[in-house]
Length: 394
Image (cartoon, rainbow, N blue to C red; front, side, top):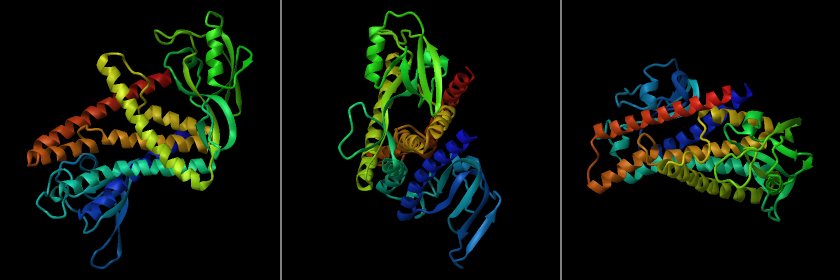
């Protein structure tokens, strides 16, 4: 239950921030916004401010609101209310912002998305991504004020206040490896291997290299929160070409550090920008390896895998949960700005094509591209989710 609640709250926060970016820039650009919803339809209730009486009017029930034209849009949604309705919806899956004409309809009306200048439409589309980066910066700033896990392998700067000394912390587990089969999880702390206490990842690597010819299982002492686990793990060659056998997890020398508030703000937003760059690089490596046939360079998680990671982080403490929430927000930003139809980046591409050829791309072609892109994304989510579920069963 903790995993589900934490996942819904974090995903909802990231998506609502994203959609609010679209909302505020659309309104400032003179576009009409039909609805700003938290959660997905059907609608539970909502309210709007009547432009004539200036009174708040409450709305109960779904009305004409449908999930289909909210999520993807077929352009035929009738205008139900004289002002933007703020709604709470029954499906707790993020939120949405329904802008007039966003799917190509009502292009001749002045308050429509399609009637605005190209740069205004691009600003509206990019605003959601920008808000996700800002949210990550805020979260990381708060984290650095109260204490945030950090890789301390290269030391820490003089302004940092160390709350917890560096420990070998598991960051990722290779699927099907001895560590995976033994139940090693993200956030576990490695205390000793074969009776030898180890303080850094370098020490762990050197120990495994020295004992690379060992064929007997090691006694590995692991801490998961306050719980002590004693596991028997055998090393093996995880990937071809590696110079020594290992357990099958990636680790970092993680400790807890914090900064004075005025430094924490700078550190938080700088870390968010670095995170964006790293996620772009990760996507580049992912696509490159798939093209050249080298397979996945790392595991890709779907909604189930992300939910499990959120749950593990919640059990580790608020600092770890903040860190994961920031990374989810940044990942949402990067994914949405990719030039893929149905995503914000894909819509920006069509606007740029319009500027290059001097006329809009026919609506039927653009909508067909977005529909195909949406279906392919849904298929990818289903496949990755299936892998996540199979991994949990195993």
